[in-house]
Image 1: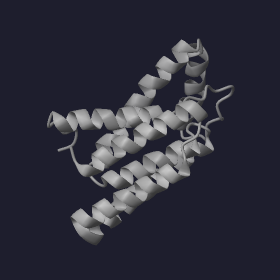
Image 2: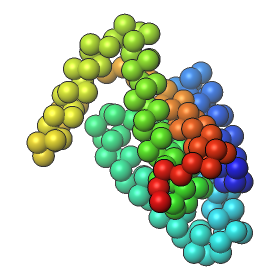
Image 3: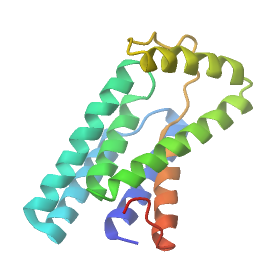
Image 4: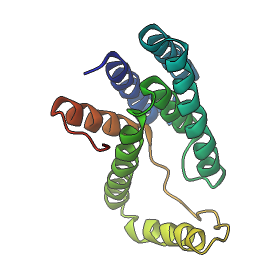
Length: 172
């Protein structure tokens, strides 16, 4: 396990606990993760590593801002995911983000099932997904179920660590 992945695991665990308890991800945590991650990238890979980390952060912030504007994810969750991606850098951030999205779907379905909101969640998913596939701006989810997405970010980091420990690569 790399130092960057261990840092992301620790920060995302703290973020998940805070998100479950208070429905907020502290900005101090996100800022500390980003600063530590960029410092790690600079120490290991020089300016190029830090620049790649910043680029990964910017890309996730841009995509996350779009998702946030449709109320699909919280702002703190976007910042935590972006800081974690910047800490991991390219190419490690790619499987991390993909696994986080996959874990988000699994955790979201489980969360909706436990709350008895599976049908409403499915209707909201259709209301957002079908227009997007047709190239039309989707309607905002109605009566959506807010879940602590930092739990999914931690699960994605955990899956990334497990695959890394097993020497399994998702990308060539």
